[in-house]
Image 1 (cartoon, rainbow, N blue to C red):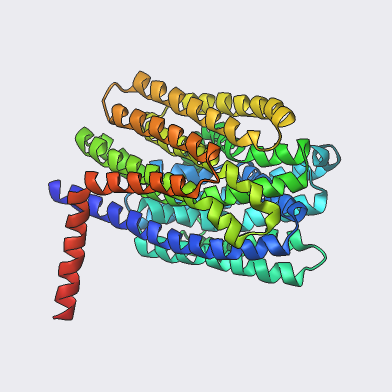
Image 2: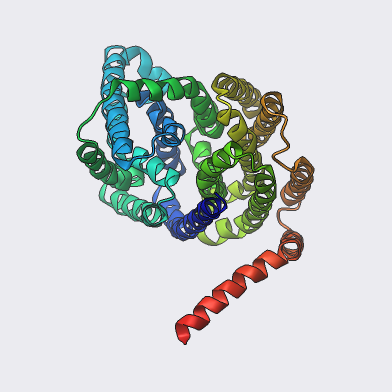
Length: 481
């Protein structure tokens, strides 16, 4: 039992590290590509492309019934690989059929729906085709994450961002009269091609199976979670859509640049939590509370220092690499990062609720928070402009974090997390964010804070850092000998 736990823990750590390395390489490529794209695209074109991508993320959840979310839960009891592929085949076929049916309903009522969605039928049809073709890629990624297939996820994460960015630049050049279309297609082209390949693989290995019981089990998990997932997408994306509708496409384009930079933090942090959550479910099952508490503190500190590091560097990144039209975006990177920090922290509490099958409770919290965010945006953007959306998002994610904490305590009294550490990190990060916004132009102050925080992390985790470096040194020494 102990040996299995150590193997599981080792695989999870390897997955986290490989995800981080691959995504950091991808993020570097994105940072190189971003100034090229901002010079090629006007703020208006950038706003249209970003709004389309945002809406596509929302539409995908509805079209495909979010069935991928059931994989973590079902695979805990489904041990044989052959049966797992039959499960994947079942939900792949069913969700694809469901997508076609939902699109047919949209097409009938397209004249009424298009003004609400903000795009015409051609754009919505493109969106539908993209969602349908990406389905296989989404399912296989969830499968790889659960099974700690670190090589597969490493290759995927290593390729997806660079290929998408390079294709975006090429297509923006090629489609000179519709540059925003080049960005839209380029972002997802890799996922579309991989999605087709993964779909074929799922069908072949799953023997084109569609088991009624598998579909039913999946829907019992996914359907109650759709409101939660939609609310989450609204929370992270409605800012752009509302800015586009209330203020204009240019402002949405500027905000999207700040969001793209802050999204580096979200992407890297999310890769930590992908293997983390299944690991937590297994630890809760085995009642290994101390293991969760100790390791979660490390994750909290990692996200905290990444957050500070990113918004400290943001003003220089924007000034050096991005078109002057977007320079005011630097001021709002810090509050967006703070919002992402709370977004990541709530996952700790969500994991416990999800383990106890409190899907309705999870959905209610997300919906309530999404509604609060929409109301705050509607008021604040009109009064203070598009930059206010960054601060309303911070408030919304903070509320979400609080709701899920009390929701977790309601269903499970076990002390899985060190709340004192989380409170200290949250308060310190809030203060640092305020200082960063107020004194945004004072280069020395911003970097002094980063250095102090970095030294704190090095001192706090010096033993762990030395242990890792020692293992790397010994391994290299053996290879050289």
